[in-house]
Length: 363
Ligand code: AMP
Image 1: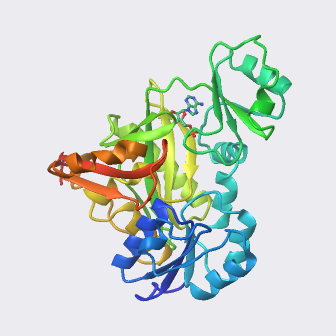
Image 2: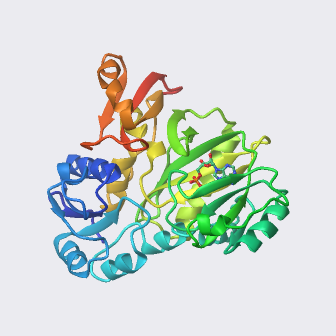
């Protein structure tokens, strides 16, 4: 694109979950319409979008229709088939670039990319059978996290090993699905943080302050801002995000998760080429949320200043947590957001809320 997307234009979004829903809402506020490509009809995003194409993400006719109907296409999840993203990119601008999907879809490729641009990660070894697992585990003194290389999220497809040298590992690879795996060294982190950053088509860069993330059962539970880290650690995390965005010639918002070690140094855990759960607090505590920031980037509008007016804690509502709604609504300075999912199931993200604490320093 050479000029900002005109109000009234259509933005295509691949994926119809809560992230697509919040992108569609932000797009609407800036005067855009949205089309959602998602196989499940009546999905959270389609409820607030102008239109839905009900089809698989790799359906050729549906992708052609999406390209035909949209001025620009983006996506809300990192497992969009790369071939589909590339086919679309031949017809219509696609942001973030499909290369970001390629890198983020495979944990081995992701680490090679990050290490190649000088960003450290946990030591790791590809594992394709039980023998390779035994060799890799002994390399890390029996302490590691075994993960599927592809399609993992919210701690799914993971197994933790502690002091597991010399144990019987037979059947482990098969039990993990018989798919390509990676063993990561168990990182003795002090805390987990993430940075939500954005890059515009003109190369401009903006990063929100890092959030401190706490997980429960592998799923994000809370994000607290500011994170309790030294200013130099926060700056290093934002610099790493900038390096990633520049290396990918990226346009849009990215979420980068880090482990913070005892000495304040950082390892990247993973990156998500999309808006991110640990950035939901920006909707309540910043004038420009991560969702608007992403829409601004893909629409070639100036990026927003990522200042925070309030310190805050975001908490996810998982499964039956959604029953807390009446009590939450009675609290002051609390912004609640539900995703329009009819059925609550254990482990399913139903909504989140952000509790504003106090004005941020300097706000
Ligand atoms: P992931 O799906 O890779 O983000 O992992 C989910 C969570 O598991 C992370 O947020 C960490 O809390 C934990 N975890 C993942 N990998 C490691 C590791 N190599 N060392 C220690 N903890 C880990």
